[in-house]
Image (cartoon, rainbow, N blue to C red; front, side):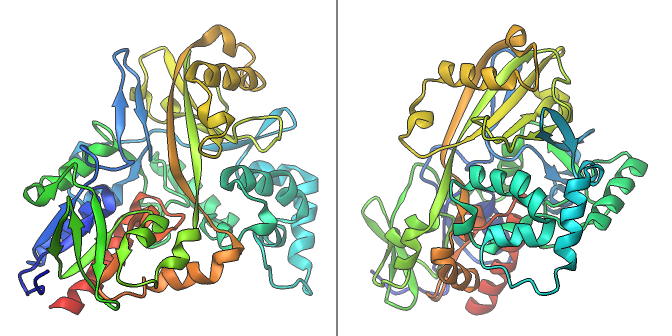
Length: 441
C-alpha cells in the first residue's frame, strides 16, 4: 500500500449521523474525505418507514432538538413537538415522572434516608448508585427493574456509569418543565449532556422523519459517499491507522473514523492487538413491536415505563400523542420495547405472535386494547444499547479517552459505546473532529 500523503482522504466508516457529521465538518475544513457505507441506505438507525395506510415507524430516535436542527441548517423543515411526558405504571395506576414520586410517602422517606446517610460507601455497582441517589424503595421498585430489563444484566453486575445519563436534579427538572409550560414548548430534559440544558432547547420533528436530517447533511458530501461498500479491515502499522480494505482493495488514509460497534471495530483492526479488549463489550438486542390501534390518548403519557416483572416489555410509547402526524386521524401507534438476546424465543417469535403477546399485557393499561387492535409491525436490532458491565469498566473508561491507536477515532452511539442520543452524538463527534484537524494540519 502506498504511503498516505497530505491529499490522502480521511476515511469514514458508516453514513449515519456521526459519519455524516464527521464528513461535513472535515470537508468544510478543506480536508478530503471518503465515506464507506455497508448498506444501500444512508442514516443508519435514524431511519423512518412509512406504511401504505398512513403510519410512520421510526427505527431509532423519534425527535431531535431545535438546537441540533439549527446547527445543521434544517430548522425550516422541522415541526415543534406539541407534547411530551413520562409516567411509570406502579401497582395498577400511572405515576407521573418526576413529581408523582413525591406523592408516595414510602419513596420520599427512603430518598431522605439515603441523602442523610453520611457513612454510605462509594457505590461500586449500578444497584448501589440507584439506592444511594433515590433511596432503596424507589431504586428496588422502579429504577433497578427497568435498568435490568433494558440492559439484560443484573444491576449488581453493572457499572455506576449507567446512572450518569439520568437527570437527578428535581429542582432543575421542575424549572425546565415550568419554563416549557410558559413557552408552550416541549423543553428537552435529559437529552444532551455535552451542552447545557435550557428553556431554549426543545423537541422538534423533521418533516419526512429523522432520516431526512441525515439526507440533508449527505447532500453536502454525497460525491464522496460509497454505499454497499463494507469495510473489510482497518489497516495499521501497529501504532497508527494507515488505511482500510474495501472489496479487496487497500485504500490509504490520513486517518480513519469508525462508527462501527466497538466489538466489530476490534475485529476490523489489523496490525495490532490493542483493541482486543473491546471484543468482549456487549450491546443489548431489542425487539420493537408497533401496535396499530383505533383511537388516541390510550396511554397516560407519551412514554409509560413498566417496571413490573409481569410485563414482557419495559416501556410503551404512544408516539402520536407527541407527534400526531405519525398516525392517521382517529388512530394511534403504541410501541412496546422488549429486551432479548439474538436467537432467543422473543427474537425468533413471529410478528403476529409478538403483537398478541404485547396486546395481552397492554390490556392491563388499556382494558379495551383488544377491540382497538389492528395489527402490528415489528422492528428488530441486535445493537440497541451499550451494556456497561463492571467486568470491562476499566477498558470502557480508557476507550472514552482514546482508541489507543493514532489517527483512529470511534464516534457515534455504537462507536463510542455510550448512552448518548442524537444531539450528543453530533456535538461529541464535532469535538473529536476538531481534535483530528489539529493533528493533521
